[in-house]
Image (tube, rainbow, N blue to C red; front, side):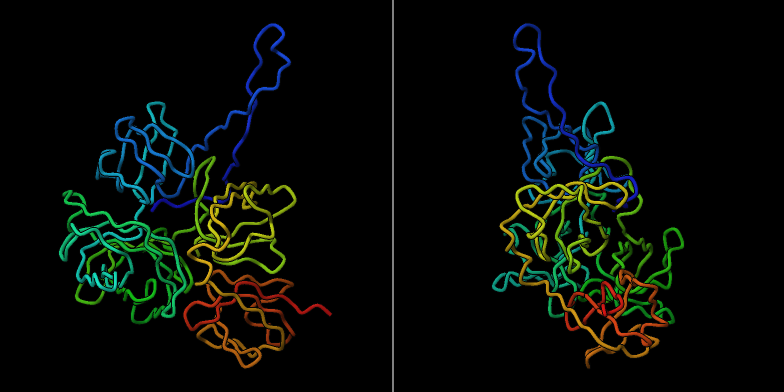
Length: 380
């Protein structure tokens, strides 16, 4: 998946129409919405006859459809609830990039339980009757906390017989259980990855908690990685709108995490649509536009108790933590807390000195793990 940049995100702009001549020139005119140059989200509707798709409430005339850099598709291949990135930088129309969470072969289906297995991950979704074991599929999903760890809320599963898809394996997810010596980690809740022969894009340092994209081959129950790329909201181009699920919110609602992979700040300039700041909670679906990491606009997409609300839980502890161990955990109030790539330290704290201070720890519960998101000194 293409990286998404915080540093250059630009908010939506509403501009008024110019008035005509005569007496009508002073009449108020309805605003015209300027579409963002790039949108990432799910397809709301596909109109093949009109050659348009709707993503995040915006309609786009489709000029091209692709997966990666080499595999071309058409609008006929698109379906509702597929994850895509749409760019309008071309004058000929919108360029649509398929952004699945997984690409792989279905190895098991339990229709009674509405589950299936792709790339070592057991996913819950009622499959189309035309999809069978052995078929190659694209799975679009959003992150969901499960008892086993950070899993997937499946949005769509699309069968492909395209030669550019058959034989390919790809999976995205939260990295955990990293073992640098064995060159292995777990992706999502259950996919075991061997990256001993992989190219790490941009020579990035792998850390627990990162959201990564892995390409390679399934080898039994292990995903043998050929490429590993860390996905963040730090390297995209202008004017972007991102759809997703809120996966953490600070106690004072001054910042939040989206899709378990990037953080945005909320300030006095942040505008809210179809809700208020009080509705910014974990599990809520939103669309966000931002500039330099500051959310300019947050639009709520559900009734604030959507499909994700029950799966995401937060915690907050205050006390004297223990020394951070080599596996990046510490104990506070008899609870083991994990530090990962997205843990933020405030007030001059770091993992080497927190044991000398009384602290407040906020975080999220992922499976059985309590993962710190913000650590600051306790107020006197």
